[in-house]
Image: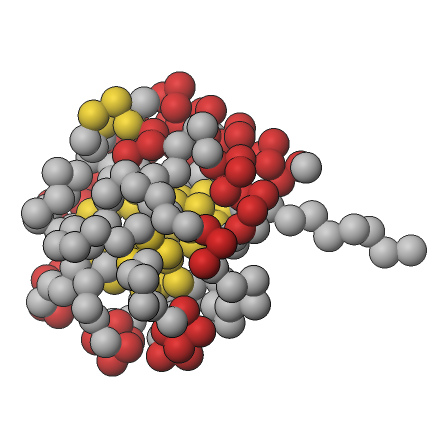
Length: 212
């Protein structure tokens, strides 16, 4: 008799600017850490900061760099300190594929978006990250969207983002059953500064939802 498969929702914490926050996230067993390389974000870091912060990330924790329509030359400078790329702008599949790292594509949930079409268009992505849509803001809005709009049979793994907090993460996991969840503002004390209690509570609530 075969054992029942165990489903675990992966967790990505994003927007790190302090090494001690990274240490706390790693101790909690977080799967991936996000570094915002887009300078217009209040959570952004430069290449030198990325190098220093990424040096403290141990093996088997994925270092993800977030970019928004930025020059290829700049992204190339960041590659030695990252394991994966996350594109939040209007990048074409060709733009995303040109680098020697796996990547995911973030999609903002406009009313007219066709996720099946986008999954086919970005078929070489490792996953699609689904975020709330606000005109002129490529991410980090702190807003949720209607999770029922996500088809159950999407051809790509779904990373759910957008306004996730301790208060709604269990329901999000139960309703969407995403491959992973991505949170930034929902675990912060202020922009770029994480709250240790919120981080621990978020991880705990995901685990409890997985166990249901």
